[in-house]
Length: 400
Image (tube, rainbow, N blue to C red; front, side, top):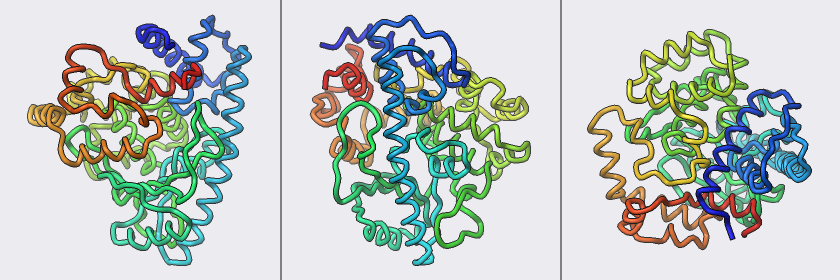
């Protein structure tokens, strides 16, 4: 039996903030927390949910036997899976060159290519690629030639999965987990209604056949910050996102930050950077923060000042009725956010159906199959835990 959800919620908060402080300090040797057996298992769940279990094998020297064994095993699995991902990227590059097709490898692939992470440090749930809209048919044929099939299409991307292979159950990363591919034609996020698009900053002005890097560190930073903003809006930010941004920030020259203002005002960049600065001291230049303060709407600025990693991530156990409404810039956007929550669009319903069909952690969960009206009634009458959080907590506690 699971402990009470109130106990789980408190444990998630305590361990999340402790892990964030430990990773940000990057100085192994801090004193081992005096945690209960439950809290140590919840720490394993949090490390997995936030994508930092392999990093903690190197940057956390807490002397607790089960913890040390777990994070080291996670690092071993990630390192082995990284070899498979590197091989897949090489095959994509070779096929794209042969077909005179330009592709941009995004996020984790780019961070590894810059040497910000070593093999085994950073898990990658999938491989993200960006192509021009006109190149989607050729890219689809390329991926099919590599043994991939289209799984589903969302407004942000198309998801391809290997024709063979099934997800591996259990807690954390596994070397045999299938490598999915997310194919993008735009780099954009809804926050929560307004769509912010940074594609033209990310796609090279003179692309060549094969895998291309980002045009600049500033372009990569723009993408990381927008991705983090989208995840904050949906309360699904990960500690790994903050770590990515802090490492890249250390490589940025003063002029690199100007890319953020390349085509519009980056009002959305302040909350993720403020959160980075909360945990990674001196990671973000003061002049960048001051400039962003001027462009960020006041309600969002106030929101950003009081947020912690826990409150904008899956470590916050309860579902929120109106996630992201604090990002609405006008009363009209806020009203539309409420309307879409009460009466989901056809696109949102289809996206939910695709999630239920394809996401391993949603299989067999009765909550996700309730009618929308019954879910609203549940929200209004009692706290409702997040299914993704409960899945990893149950796995950590051996509940299956």
